[in-house]
Length: 186
Image (cartoon, rainbow, N blue to C red; front, top):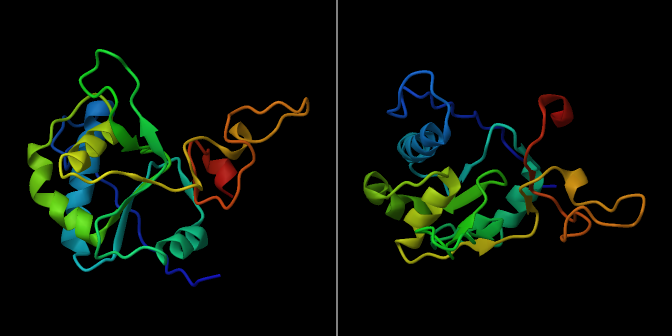
């Protein structure tokens, strides 16, 4: 397994994100994501990779590090679990984006090209869709990577009756799981 150096989490508060103090609705999450990306690029300008994850997402660091060995951070990559917004009549209908809960990985090249656009990107009601729209505006498509999961592991496993709770089937080589409680993380 590759060695992983622990990195500190970055907490962006509503005040820092430019929203009203004490709010924690989807709009403040959008501002936190955009502010977090700016902060990461400023504080770690030479990092090869940047990742946005929710606070209830469990990451398997060695799997993430191993995955990133196959990609060139000097190219524009947006990696994670690809989803498509299927809401006829919605302005973003048909947009491919990455699940924010499963994690969104930005290459150095992509994030630094995206930075000047962040203040001009339209935001909608979902943070991950807003980020996806902004990346799509640059002409970059998301890259789906097996192993990023927007649900907990049990969601994907077979039940005792042999039925699957989700169409993905058994989990292989996980990188992330979303909706994990603090007790489940340990």
